[in-house]
Length: 112
Image 1 (spheres, rainbow, N blue to C red):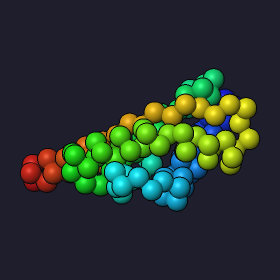
Image 2: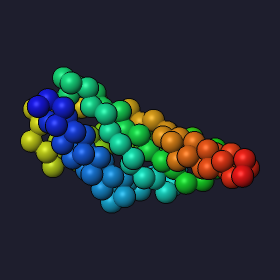
Image 3: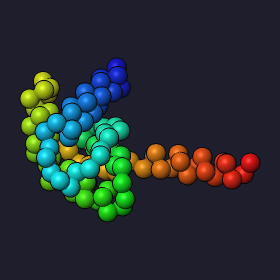
């Protein structure tokens, strides 16, 4: 049962964080960002937010810095939209699974 509860919490946080990034943030460093997943710790004190960023390596790093500096705005949005006892501290990580998938596809095409 705890697994399904954590999945629901992670999904709600993913939706709220995604909405906050697209609607509430005006930092020019933040480019085109997609929140791919959220992993919340069992005690709900921390949450890793995995994001995919469209652009170059420099744009990716600038976007991650912008998100890190805006975590307070995002956390206040989480507090306003959820009924959690405590708002988790957010850390942002780049999700490279899309790049890995593209690389695997390219390797498979080369083999044919």
